[in-house]
Image (cartoon, rainbow, N blue to C red; front, side, top):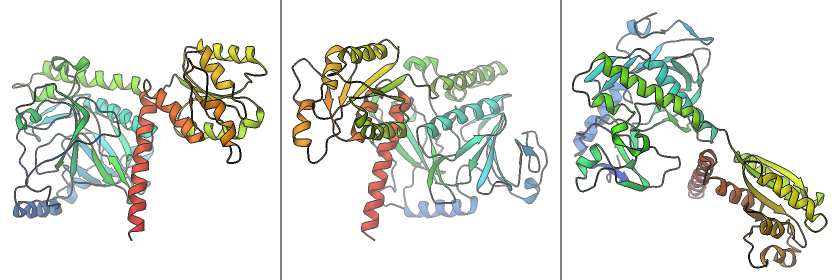
Length: 442
């Protein structure tokens, strides 16, 4: 164990690589490891119990059951996949082996809601389907922006298929707003204080009753993936930032007595979240139009297009010359301005670049110059893109990737999917540097 982490919680004020929702919280009383003896005891417990918060089956009898009140069982078939042994079971989900799909498991949600590490627990009909819908949409969103997760696909109304992972015994909680247990540990902070960047706290699993934000696992290839589930048990969600309108499991936690009417309200909240997630799925209104001054600029333009495609940014190629066909160039610009889409122009013109400045001077659309300069002409040709008349706001880059990134960053101001893909790219760049550094030191 890292000696710097023993005896206290870890609070990292680090910038996150994915968008954060209002903070997900734990129970209020959070014990920490205060001695090496406690740490050794916990390690011993983890080795005997298995990692994670889920319980391993206590006997072969449980593994061989064909049916229980929780639904699907070993030996049954789900979406064409025959279930193998019950790998592990928790309060709200069960995990089955998939003999016909090595390296994968099936996670099935239960119609059960719990709080306080199971101290409070109730049956909630329909929760399994809602939880599965929610976690599937969240993971589909993460996968669509390039984040590596264990999620593979949904498999029926209450389950999904995932890569088999050995769970990392650490929980990551990201806080956008100060509330809950954070206020008890930091009484001088006002409730609702906004963290910029979001505050990340790290807790050792099973050492505290913590409601996690996300968990990670290591798959059979040794890759670290976002794993487990991400549903309405995993966050705090306050519509319009108003705590009174909370839609998360805290509503259930706050109940002193639980009636069927209360459970119906919690279920309705969970369903509301699952439905709202549909609006977060990729459906871009963004567009980058690459205008080249000549067909000879196509190779350079195709490189820009490739980088845009890698970022998932919709794009189009057009050929028009501001010198030889000014009127047609302005018609093309007007066509996109009136399209109702969020547009960025990238002007690709060698020698004397009139295309970018003409577009910039006659539209309100952002214009990025990316002239196809070479080492033997850059000192002459680049100046027509840099030394432009006053009143023009076009920017200039000389590398295709830089043009694509600049356009994507403009769109990231209004498009959360492009924003997320850029953050994943930045994370990937960071990881590649860490890996490269490790390689040169070995």
